[in-house]
Image 1 (cartoon, rainbow, N blue to C red):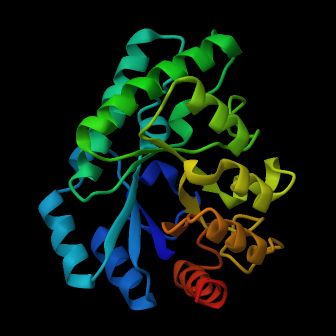
Image 2 (image 1 turned 90 degrees about the vertical axis):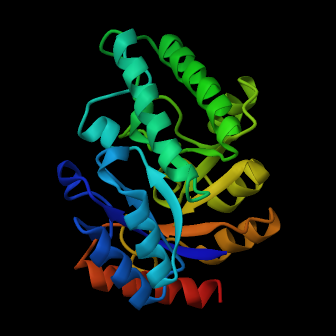
Length: 270
């Protein structure tokens, strides 16, 4: 398993669970200095990143791109894959595809988290799930065309009322026949929704394509009450060899959160 750390370039998301902010240049430099293998980037849109500049930054600092987030689609542009408005859903699909196209240039996946939306306000739960499944089916095809995967992230009940557990995500993806959509297992969300984190990981098995490495309080690993050893054992059992990416609050500050994360990573992963 490899380490990664988050960089948010979205001012509207300030206060959220991202370690580094505002500057891709500074974020990559600091991630390399702390010893991370990769960065996970959250841009305002695909056109906010120059692929040549990003490639240079990654190469200069010996980093990989772990994933690219689509959260700005909701936070900044108010786009949702489950909106009752069909035109909004189409714009949301286009936004996700553009992020997928950017990420694929670096053999990295895109992430769908908050853009999955929720039911209510003009859309019933069955309708919202149908919209979500339809969108993921289309994006699964796009991922296949790109030769990459898409990451779908179950969120806790306070952030969505659609899919909250890894098991529910497996059911959704199996139901639509998705072959190129993997599950993002976020340990913070799982701490709220799963009865047993390790069992949930084992049950999801090879469907897991990415892990957000966060403690129970969404702070850096080691600053909450999550027992990470059973989690790592379960990931080893399912043959997971991807990233443990720190999508955590930058508390008490970014550098301390980064140092705490990499220290815990080295302690439990080696």
